[in-house]
Length: 110
Image 1 (cartoon, rainbow, N blue to C red):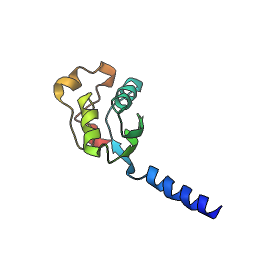
Image 2 (cartoon, one colour; image 1 turned 180 degrees about the horizontal axis):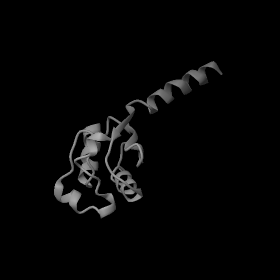
Image 3 (tube, rainbow, N blue to C red; image 1 turned 90 degrees about the vertical axis):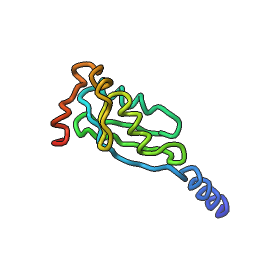
Image 4 (spheres, helix red, strand yellow; image 1 turned 60 degrees about the horizontal axis):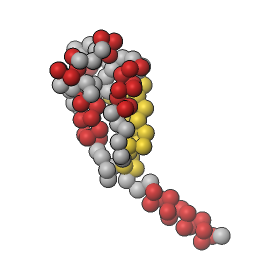
């Protein structure tokens, strides 16, 4: 029995090897933003992506052997949302629905 417990603990640690959690600031306003942001992160290596419109925080769980925080932020910026480190291209941002266009000048106050 003791061997089984040790083996289980060993294999459990292997499964979580490389698994990281992080929270990053992502700017947006509404449920459509939430859907767009989270959908952009439905890729291999990301096991959880949950954005909160009130706090503007994206809580993540990801495998850092398969992706990185900068790659995650690039994907988010690629769909029109600024992050704490990257600004989305103006042309992409301008194509967002009106309700999703947050005040980019005021975002640093959030």
